[in-house]
Length: 101
Image (spheres, rainbow, N blue to C red):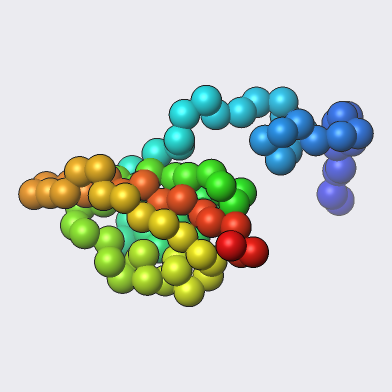
């Protein structure tokens, strides 16, 4: 038997896109070095999909994430800025651009 829990939520979502009321003041960072390689790209896709146009995500990777950036660029318009370039880690700020741009 499955039990369902009714959750009370505000009728209008807050600016962050969900109804929790929390929001990030800074650009969120995702350290993908801690994610198993087999699911690393999928984890980044999930995080990226949560970013609205005009907002950004910083990923921390163990190498230059060129294949991943190409995959993201095939999903949406993006701008990339390398904040740290090796030799042991790369920090890349990925901004999701408006599809209308």
